[in-house]
Image (tube, rainbow, N blue to C red):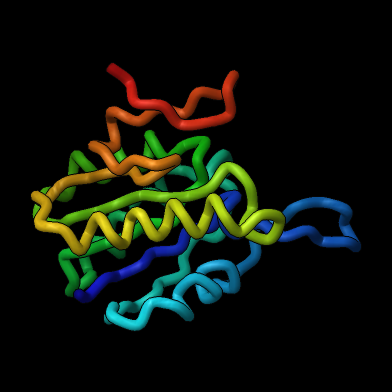
Length: 164
């Protein structure tokens, strides 16, 4: 299977900067590279763009993401994205792209703090793409992969839930 992985930042990638005393979104793929080291049966390319907390994303950033998806030669796409505005970006893409299988994923806790959630969410996205699925925009979080419009971040509970 061939997959394009678009890494846009978000909590998934955050690391603590001891000099500034805060979590930052780095300009690299260290978190993702750690997971990909175990992907032996996948032909992938990684595109690192934006590198922001999703609360700081603009429509200019979303257009950059959209263009990266459109320009990908692969029909299978995973987008690492911050969880706060993944709904906005997935809606933005849905208006412009219908010929690819796109799975958004991310994490509520940085991989640098706890590797389990980010690894699980990414692995779900990858496994989902290896199944016989229709073109569309999906979200892989917290044990499920569904149409991106049906999985909603519940801020009070700190998790994603399927909206009925």
